[in-house]
Length: 343
Ligand code: NAD
Ligand code: DAU
Image 1 (spheres, rainbow, N blue to C red):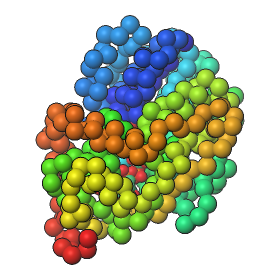
Image 2: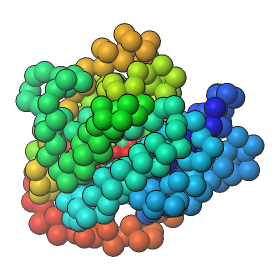
Image 3: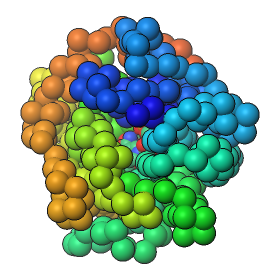
Image 4: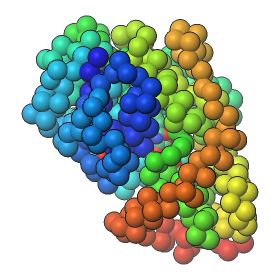
């Protein structure tokens, strides 16, 4: 089967391509990616000539590019997106264009092409924020809080509406926070590993007690393939690792793994509208699709720290480019204003 993957040069996409080409001889991949700041050809450079892989540089919101890319494909896994909450607070427009308009354009192209499955990679953030107890299930009402999660909720609901209205074979996945190799160093875990390695401050938002439910990217990729293979059109599947940790706990784990001092922790002004807690109930996906996460959190984080230490050139190149302006805009004032004695 030939599958159109969108956003394959990003973090989850690169891990998806690597997994499929190594383990799924029955699948060919066409990767449509616009190569935004988050799309890095270096992530897949060694696979560029693989016989079951083809790369197309293009924008999912471009009708012609989307139609050309999906031609000859029997299925779509759509994960191209603007993915960073902080950037969506700084400028929501690109999130609406790519995540909402791009999804609508791709849904139309895939409908015209008559694909037999369309997996929309949504996120647990569409559910909004939890209190100290409880879990997100697939029937939890959507209550997104950031421009990012609102744009993802729009895409998620559009896919389900195409199923309801046109009988289009869309399936939606909602996964919790991923970690692992190739994650862009704007996100918590790679940012803190690479900053700690350079003895730079770790800017922890608010009181550091916000909770995320972490899953290794490889387990997410296996979940997406289970949905592609066996998911039912029109259904939603939660994917989560069952590893709830406060951001402070994550920070301490990273510092311990690198042998760095707690004095690097710097509490800074909170993210606007910061969701307090996410936690996924993946009972449906486990029961119906026979999927379960396999990577132990402690071992997964240790392996991830090792990966970043062994791939310095990969992230040093990113952090020395346009990323520096972003970091100054996002963190410069907050770090300068951080009280010295809050650790
Ligand atoms: P990422 O930011 O690392 O990668 C996004 C990719 O999409 C990049 O390669 C980028 O070039 C590409 N892209 C962006 N705009 C595009 C456009 N207009 N046309 C074509 N390509 C475009 O993101 P990620 O962390 O790998 O996330 C992938 C998907 O998974 C996203 O849809 C995200 O919402 C979802 N998700 C992520 C997580 C997580 O923890 N990272 C968890 C749940 C769901
Ligand atoms: O839950 C799934 C989502 O997880 C995905 O849909 C998003 O694409 C992905 O980016 C991620 O969103 P988060 O906002 O949870 O991830 P991030 O790594 O940005 O932040 C994780 C937590 O760490 C969050 O509570 C904010 C906090 N944080 C983050 C950064 C970057 C800090 O305290 N300091 C920081 O510098």
